Length: 258
Image 1 (tube, rainbow, N blue to C red):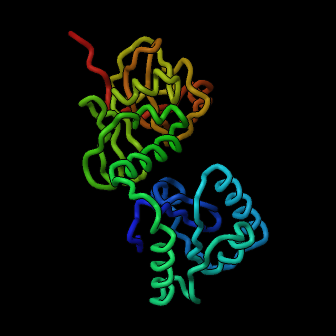
Image 2 (cartoon, helix red, strand yellow):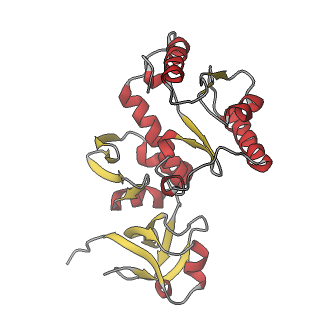
């Protein structure tokens, strides 16, 4: 980040057709898998989408200053955020544009308090957890410490790992992390009374949280008793309705006493 006070700056990417992508969420699907070159031409529908997204985003998140370092998107952002400060000079990657960005950011953040890097990183991990699991995800980050270097970061609570941030941008659950989600009644899959010895198939699923989508991290349980964690292969509704097919690709299974 081209700023003398980088922890006071929050980056948000403006792109079509995805809209707005906060920097800490750029590894999430579909942003992390989007490899189609952009043309710089924006349709009216795309411009309207970004305008609506920007207004909603700024209504939910308070910023003292908005800096717009953009190319073809600049007029769209300016229309939605008239007070935004433009910094691009023809091309955003030109030396002149980058120098303008640095100068503007330094001026905008000069009076801002310096946020400790650890606190800022915790805030970004909270954003990841909330985006992935809703408000229940904050339980994974609350009071946690972080070990490792991005993108591979372990989340530790009370000496126990609860999740792992990986290159795909998501938090992968441990059994302890699954228990935290289960207590919040989020992203759970209810199974019959058995200990999984492999992946969970739909025939063994009794019920599932309606918010589950294929690819989501889930906790497998029986009557609140956590049995496993893994990745959903079906939506929550499909797990209940289907009688065959893999429902959860299991990563960790609880060890039962002999």
